[in-house]
Image (cartoon, rainbow, N blue to C red):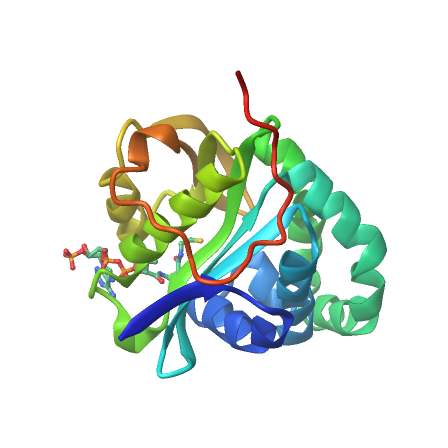
Length: 220
Ligand SMILES: CC(C)(COP(=O)(O)OP(=O)(O)OC[C@H]1O[C@@H](n2cnc3c(N)ncnc32)[C@H](O)[C@@H]1OP(=O)(O)O)[C@@H](O)C(=O)NCCC(=O)NCCS
């Protein structure tokens, strides 16, 4: 049986492996395993991030990471976490100098998403190879929406590569989505989808455990 619960810091390594497997050649993966582990630990520790994973027999088979607010999450990540991985990141850049322009672009990720307060950005969503095409990601998304609603988010925003058919297919099954902007980043054509939480709550569920994310006050 597959269980869904919030990511914990000790899950960061397994989450990093799924990220690298699902998004090879993208900037975050090219920055190396140590960087990804630190990123996922930050997602767990920060009130401006949250991770949810699917587990089978105690093993992570899929995971998603969200920034409750990209502006606040990445501002905190830069001063609280990035220094810990300066050396491995520097070596990664030395090994592949061409990624420096993508690092510069990624530095202002929040400016790319332009998501206002109460709109969360999906940093990653991925399923282990052996579990693809079994409906695991849509189930994970239902848990993401349950959580997002519980903390007062109004929109889940997905930045995806235009040629990434599986994720576009999956997002297209959600209600009332729209493409907010299309742009080029990291040498790839990107689409930025916005999906309203309220219109996608019919099958939403809460993950097991307790979220440590920021909770927005109820709007009257
Ligand atoms: C996108 C992703 C999360 C979908 O997960 P999933 O659990 O396989 O989702 P689904 O079971 O609903 O399958 C979605 C659809 O994508 C397509 N698809 C999924 N994997 C595929 C593959 N390996 N080859 C071809 N099509 C595939 C199919 O159309 C499938 O629907 P179908 O089986 O009904 O035809 C998964 O493909 C993945 O982890 N990709 C790598 C990471 C990634 O790119 N994430 C998005 C950016 S953050």
